[in-house]
Amino acid sequence: MKHLLSLLLFFSFISASNSQNTKDVYDKALTLKADFKYKEALPYFQALMKVDSNNVDFLAHGSQVYTRFGYLYMKTESEKFGYFHKAEYLAKKAIAKDDKNAEAHYAYALALGRINENASSKTKIANAKLIRKEVDRAIELNPKQAGAYHILGRWHATIAGFNAVEKAMINTFFGGVPPGGSYDDAVKCFQTAISLEPKNMIHQYELANTYYAMGKKDIAKTWLEKAMALPVTSDDDKITSDKCKELKNKLN
Image (tube, rainbow, N blue to C red; front, side):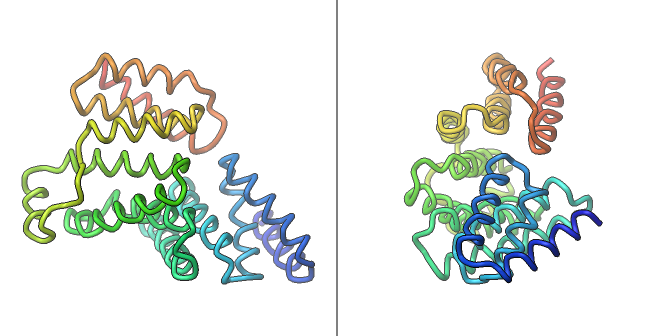
Protein backbone atom coordinates (compact mmCIF):
# COMPACT_ATOMS: atom_id res chain seq x y z
CA MET A 1 0.00 0.00 0.00
CA LYS A 2 2.81 2.40 0.90
CA HIS A 3 4.49 1.69 -2.47
CA LEU A 4 1.23 2.36 -4.33
CA LEU A 5 0.53 5.61 -2.46
CA SER A 6 4.05 6.83 -3.19
CA LEU A 7 3.61 6.05 -6.87
CA LEU A 8 0.31 7.93 -7.05
CA LEU A 9 1.88 10.86 -5.23
CA PHE A 10 4.67 11.12 -7.77
CA PHE A 11 2.27 10.86 -10.69
CA SER A 12 0.19 13.76 -9.38
CA PHE A 13 3.23 15.78 -8.35
CA ILE A 14 5.12 15.57 -11.62
CA SER A 15 2.06 16.11 -13.80
CA ALA A 16 1.47 19.44 -12.11
CA SER A 17 5.14 20.44 -11.92
CA ASN A 18 7.45 22.49 -14.08
CA SER A 19 10.55 21.28 -15.91
CA GLN A 20 12.82 22.06 -12.94
CA ASN A 21 10.78 19.83 -10.67
CA THR A 22 10.87 17.09 -13.29
CA LYS A 23 14.66 17.41 -13.39
CA ASP A 24 14.79 17.16 -9.61
CA VAL A 25 12.75 13.96 -9.69
CA TYR A 26 14.95 12.55 -12.46
CA ASP A 27 18.10 13.36 -10.46
CA LYS A 28 16.58 11.61 -7.44
CA ALA A 29 15.71 8.59 -9.58
CA LEU A 30 19.27 8.38 -10.90
CA THR A 31 20.67 8.62 -7.38
CA LEU A 32 18.48 5.76 -6.18
CA LYS A 33 19.49 3.69 -9.21
CA ALA A 34 23.19 4.39 -8.62
CA ASP A 35 22.73 3.26 -5.01
CA PHE A 36 21.14 -0.02 -6.24
CA LYS A 37 17.82 0.95 -4.63
CA TYR A 38 15.73 -0.35 -7.49
CA LYS A 39 12.55 -0.86 -5.46
CA GLU A 40 12.56 2.83 -4.55
CA ALA A 41 13.71 3.98 -8.00
CA LEU A 42 11.05 2.23 -10.05
CA PRO A 43 8.09 4.47 -9.03
CA TYR A 44 10.15 7.54 -9.95
CA PHE A 45 10.93 6.24 -13.43
CA GLN A 46 7.36 5.07 -13.95
CA ALA A 47 6.16 8.55 -13.06
CA LEU A 48 8.73 10.23 -15.30
CA MET A 49 7.78 8.06 -18.27
CA LYS A 50 4.12 8.82 -17.56
CA VAL A 51 4.90 12.51 -17.96
CA ASP A 52 7.15 12.09 -21.02
CA SER A 53 7.03 8.68 -22.67
CA ASN A 54 9.43 9.77 -25.41
CA ASN A 55 12.31 10.97 -23.26
CA VAL A 56 15.26 8.73 -24.19
CA ASP A 57 16.98 9.04 -20.82
CA PHE A 58 13.80 8.16 -18.92
CA LEU A 59 13.28 5.16 -21.20
CA ALA A 60 16.87 3.90 -21.08
CA HIS A 61 17.35 4.14 -17.33
CA GLY A 62 13.77 3.07 -16.68
CA SER A 63 14.41 -0.05 -18.75
CA GLN A 64 17.46 -0.92 -16.66
CA VAL A 65 15.48 -0.52 -13.45
CA TYR A 66 12.67 -2.73 -14.77
CA THR A 67 15.18 -5.49 -15.48
CA ARG A 68 16.82 -5.16 -12.06
CA PHE A 69 13.47 -5.02 -10.27
CA GLY A 70 12.17 -8.11 -12.05
CA TYR A 71 15.32 -10.05 -11.26
CA LEU A 72 15.45 -9.05 -7.60
CA TYR A 73 11.84 -8.97 -6.49
CA MET A 74 9.66 -11.12 -8.74
CA LYS A 75 9.23 -14.70 -7.56
CA THR A 76 7.93 -16.66 -10.53
CA GLU A 77 9.49 -16.94 -13.97
CA SER A 78 6.39 -15.51 -15.61
CA GLU A 79 6.52 -12.46 -13.34
CA LYS A 80 10.21 -11.97 -14.00
CA PHE A 81 9.75 -12.28 -17.75
CA GLY A 82 6.96 -9.70 -17.63
CA TYR A 83 9.43 -7.15 -16.29
CA PHE A 84 12.23 -8.26 -18.60
CA HIS A 85 10.05 -7.92 -21.68
CA LYS A 86 8.82 -4.51 -20.50
CA ALA A 87 12.47 -3.51 -20.15
CA GLU A 88 13.19 -4.84 -23.63
CA TYR A 89 10.33 -2.77 -25.07
CA LEU A 90 11.49 0.43 -23.36
CA ALA A 91 15.10 -0.06 -24.48
CA LYS A 92 14.11 -0.68 -28.09
CA LYS A 93 11.93 2.43 -28.01
CA ALA A 94 14.85 4.48 -26.67
CA ILE A 95 17.21 3.17 -29.36
CA ALA A 96 14.68 3.95 -32.07
CA LYS A 97 14.65 7.54 -30.88
CA ASP A 98 18.40 7.90 -30.36
CA ASP A 99 20.75 5.24 -31.68
CA LYS A 100 23.71 7.05 -30.10
CA ASN A 101 22.51 6.65 -26.52
CA ALA A 102 24.88 4.26 -24.75
CA GLU A 103 22.51 3.64 -21.83
CA ALA A 104 19.76 2.54 -24.22
CA HIS A 105 21.98 -0.05 -25.91
CA TYR A 106 23.20 -1.26 -22.53
CA ALA A 107 19.60 -1.49 -21.31
CA TYR A 108 18.64 -3.61 -24.32
CA ALA A 109 21.58 -5.97 -23.79
CA LEU A 110 20.77 -6.19 -20.06
CA ALA A 111 17.14 -7.15 -20.70
CA LEU A 112 18.08 -9.72 -23.34
CA GLY A 113 20.72 -11.18 -21.04
CA ARG A 114 18.16 -11.82 -18.29
CA ILE A 115 15.67 -13.23 -20.80
CA ASN A 116 18.37 -15.61 -21.99
CA GLU A 117 19.22 -16.99 -18.55
CA ASN A 118 16.34 -19.46 -18.44
CA ALA A 119 15.61 -19.64 -22.14
CA SER A 120 15.91 -22.64 -24.41
CA SER A 121 19.17 -23.28 -26.22
CA LYS A 122 17.60 -22.12 -29.46
CA THR A 123 16.48 -18.80 -27.92
CA LYS A 124 19.88 -18.29 -26.28
CA ILE A 125 21.60 -18.77 -29.60
CA ALA A 126 19.11 -16.58 -31.44
CA ASN A 127 19.78 -13.75 -28.99
CA ALA A 128 23.56 -14.25 -28.78
CA LYS A 129 24.47 -12.14 -31.78
CA LEU A 130 22.01 -9.40 -30.83
CA ILE A 131 23.35 -9.16 -27.27
CA ARG A 132 26.89 -8.94 -28.59
CA LYS A 133 25.87 -6.25 -31.09
CA GLU A 134 24.13 -4.14 -28.46
CA VAL A 135 26.84 -4.43 -25.82
CA ASP A 136 29.56 -3.62 -28.35
CA ARG A 137 27.60 -0.54 -29.36
CA ALA A 138 27.19 0.53 -25.73
CA ILE A 139 30.96 0.25 -25.13
CA GLU A 140 31.71 2.07 -28.38
CA LEU A 141 29.53 4.98 -27.23
CA ASN A 142 30.72 4.88 -23.62
CA PRO A 143 34.00 2.99 -22.97
CA LYS A 144 33.52 3.49 -19.21
CA GLN A 145 30.20 1.64 -19.00
CA ALA A 146 31.14 -1.04 -16.46
CA GLY A 147 27.85 -2.86 -16.79
CA ALA A 148 28.39 -3.31 -20.51
CA TYR A 149 31.77 -4.96 -19.90
CA HIS A 150 30.10 -7.21 -17.34
CA ILE A 151 27.49 -8.34 -19.85
CA LEU A 152 30.18 -8.86 -22.47
CA GLY A 153 32.12 -10.96 -19.96
CA ARG A 154 29.08 -13.12 -19.31
CA TRP A 155 28.52 -13.37 -23.07
CA HIS A 156 32.02 -14.74 -23.59
CA ALA A 157 31.66 -17.14 -20.65
CA THR A 158 28.26 -18.36 -21.85
CA ILE A 159 29.51 -19.05 -25.37
CA ALA A 160 32.62 -20.76 -23.97
CA GLY A 161 30.40 -22.99 -21.85
CA PHE A 162 28.15 -24.13 -24.69
CA ASN A 163 28.12 -27.88 -25.16
CA ALA A 164 28.82 -29.63 -28.45
CA VAL A 165 25.15 -29.68 -29.46
CA GLU A 166 24.71 -25.95 -28.80
CA LYS A 167 27.89 -25.12 -30.72
CA ALA A 168 26.64 -27.21 -33.62
CA MET A 169 23.36 -25.27 -33.55
CA ILE A 170 25.28 -21.99 -33.72
CA ASN A 171 27.12 -23.14 -36.83
CA THR A 172 24.00 -24.62 -38.42
CA PHE A 173 21.59 -21.74 -37.90
CA PHE A 174 23.85 -18.73 -37.73
CA GLY A 175 27.11 -19.65 -39.40
CA GLY A 176 28.99 -19.13 -36.15
CA VAL A 177 28.99 -16.25 -33.70
CA PRO A 178 31.01 -13.02 -33.56
CA PRO A 179 34.70 -13.41 -32.63
CA GLY A 180 35.44 -14.26 -29.01
CA GLY A 181 33.44 -16.58 -26.86
CA SER A 182 36.32 -17.77 -24.67
CA TYR A 183 36.94 -17.79 -20.94
CA ASP A 184 40.08 -15.70 -21.48
CA ASP A 185 37.97 -13.01 -23.14
CA ALA A 186 35.50 -13.20 -20.26
CA VAL A 187 38.31 -12.68 -17.74
CA LYS A 188 39.49 -9.54 -19.56
CA CYS A 189 35.99 -8.09 -19.57
CA PHE A 190 35.36 -8.74 -15.87
CA GLN A 191 38.75 -7.26 -15.00
CA THR A 192 37.82 -4.11 -16.92
CA ALA A 193 34.46 -3.94 -15.12
CA ILE A 194 36.27 -4.27 -11.78
CA SER A 195 38.69 -1.48 -12.69
CA LEU A 196 35.68 0.78 -13.39
CA GLU A 197 33.57 -0.35 -10.41
CA PRO A 198 35.94 -1.88 -7.84
CA LYS A 199 33.32 -2.01 -5.09
CA ASN A 200 30.65 -3.79 -7.11
CA MET A 201 30.64 -7.34 -5.77
CA ILE A 202 29.02 -8.94 -8.81
CA HIS A 203 32.02 -8.23 -11.05
CA GLN A 204 34.45 -9.95 -8.71
CA TYR A 205 32.10 -12.87 -8.17
CA GLU A 206 31.73 -13.44 -11.92
CA LEU A 207 35.51 -13.27 -12.37
CA ALA A 208 35.93 -15.89 -9.64
CA ASN A 209 33.23 -18.03 -11.23
CA THR A 210 34.96 -17.79 -14.61
CA TYR A 211 38.27 -18.92 -13.17
CA TYR A 212 36.41 -21.81 -11.53
CA ALA A 213 34.98 -22.80 -14.92
CA MET A 214 38.51 -22.69 -16.31
CA GLY A 215 39.70 -25.08 -13.62
CA LYS A 216 41.92 -22.41 -12.01
CA LYS A 217 40.67 -22.90 -8.47
CA ASP A 218 43.44 -21.04 -6.65
CA ILE A 219 42.84 -17.85 -8.63
CA ALA A 220 39.10 -18.35 -8.25
CA LYS A 221 39.50 -18.50 -4.46
CA THR A 222 41.52 -15.29 -4.47
CA TRP A 223 38.85 -13.35 -6.33
CA LEU A 224 36.05 -14.95 -4.35
CA GLU A 225 37.68 -13.80 -1.12
CA LYS A 226 37.90 -10.27 -2.53
CA ALA A 227 34.23 -10.38 -3.46
CA MET A 228 33.18 -11.66 -0.04
CA ALA A 229 35.26 -8.99 1.70
CA LEU A 230 33.09 -6.26 0.18
CA PRO A 231 30.21 -4.92 2.30
CA VAL A 232 26.70 -6.13 1.54
CA THR A 233 24.79 -2.88 1.05
CA SER A 234 21.95 -3.75 -1.34
CA ASP A 235 19.48 -6.48 -2.24
CA ASP A 236 21.61 -7.14 -5.31
CA ASP A 237 24.61 -7.71 -3.03
CA LYS A 238 22.59 -10.13 -0.89
CA ILE A 239 21.91 -12.35 -3.90
CA THR A 240 25.53 -12.13 -5.00
CA SER A 241 26.70 -12.92 -1.48
CA ASP A 242 24.61 -16.11 -1.53
CA LYS A 243 26.16 -17.04 -4.88
CA CYS A 244 29.59 -16.45 -3.39
CA LYS A 245 28.80 -18.89 -0.58
CA GLU A 246 27.68 -21.51 -3.10
CA LEU A 247 30.89 -21.07 -5.10
CA LYS A 248 32.95 -21.27 -1.90
CA ASN A 249 31.37 -24.65 -1.14
CA LYS A 250 32.26 -25.89 -4.61
CA LEU A 251 35.85 -24.70 -4.24
CA ASN A 252 36.17 -26.42 -0.87
